[in-house]
Image (cartoon, rainbow, N blue to C red):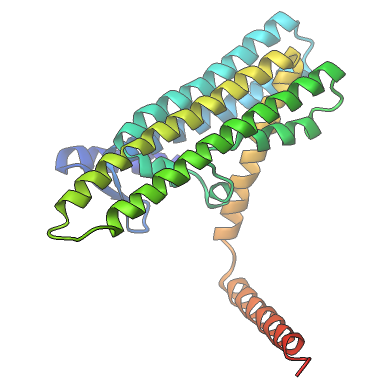
Length: 273
């Protein structure tokens, strides 16, 4: 809540002073649109925590399937909301989304085009939601396969865009650089489309999962997803708050281990001489 209040206050200052805002105490400068998204995302996380509690209580209470369906549909709408917010944010600052600056450090390790990779999520759910009926298992494997195909197509397209951008900036004679920058800017605009398509795939995956699962399995599905990302955020907080002595010890340990590996590798490499 303190972080949210700080963002809100500095966003107000950004609106009165211009387009950019420096917040977070680390000297990072982001656009006001990105700061607005961070504020909305912080609120979304608070609502996510509340809805997860309701789902847990609903699974433990003797609720009818119709009542549980209302709760699951509400949670699905909750995810639809974050995708809607990301559409707006991508128009303002696509780099903020695609680089995962709105997520914790641990979450960024697993980002794919500004969010989770659907096929990885499905793999985790198949393991966590057992027992599943044979038809459900087949459906989830089929959904994972189609997701992997779509992910591969988007990844290849993004790689081609990146290579095209490199060729534009690095290639050809440079007179004043204006023409290259204009062309590069027009190509960068395509990043927004990739984030939007990736988010569409993520959104469709969640909706398809709800169709494949029973209402109580769908509730459990959302709880598993929420707990997983909650643990990643907790891991980031623990990592950032490690004592300084631990950091120094880890650095020395890593350095020693690396040096030993290099020495061992060199000995193996020159052993025949």
